[in-house]
Length: 325
Image (tube, rainbow, N blue to C red; front, top):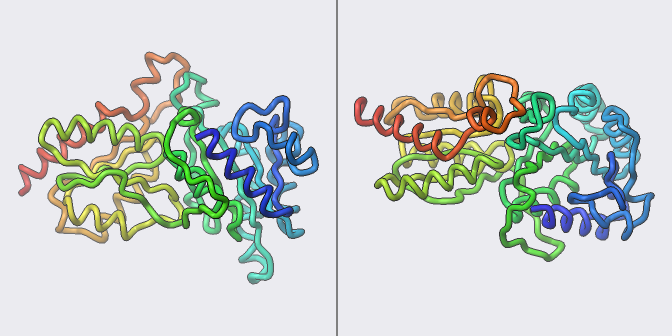
């Protein structure tokens, strides 16, 4: 995943002089993630190290976008994105509307989620639900290197502000990646990572891999689980979600975001509206528990979704289906 994102940034910088990167410790020699090597290749005027000020980073990106550039800003840890909330919510997301369509804010904000790495209550939060609620923002969470490269490429050249959420626990995830510069994945398209017939497990980001591991175990138990990877949360591919749920008639939703008022709640509401009377059992959600993330790994393991929790949820929905018919 790390190299796939680096390749997407590299090819975007190469393809268009309007693209530039800015953020904390993103230039060499300090860069160790997806931006490693890029300041050496393209220079400090294209890969800018900034002061430790999330508001300044996003504010500068918006100003540059208004002036015709394509900035890719990095907020190192998602917990700190709230410091730039005014710039994102009241400036970037509203610019097209406030100017009557005369200008927009084509910025990409990359940020990292450290959930599951025992980094504590203020360095582990998964906050995509905040920004799903903001009209004008696009929200993207890739689960594979291929999706990471294709979706980041699309986000960089999109005309609207895109929040691109990277999961640190997936940086070492391996997988095939198209290396040609033209590869991009359109927004608004979910991906069925594994077809199935008995239950739809809908997820995104890191939890997709928990869902796939759970599906392997469930297969041995005689249950065929379809795994749907949402990829972009906004725009949301409602058609794929509904079609999958209509086929299997049972749904489990899994995500690292807190379960209460999380993305799964909106998806559940959509399915209730679209498929009332067609589902064989109530939708079951598996999210992070409603507590601050502990720093102790033994405690943290009880907070986030896991294959075991997803398997248990599938069994609950299968039992409900047997009871209700």
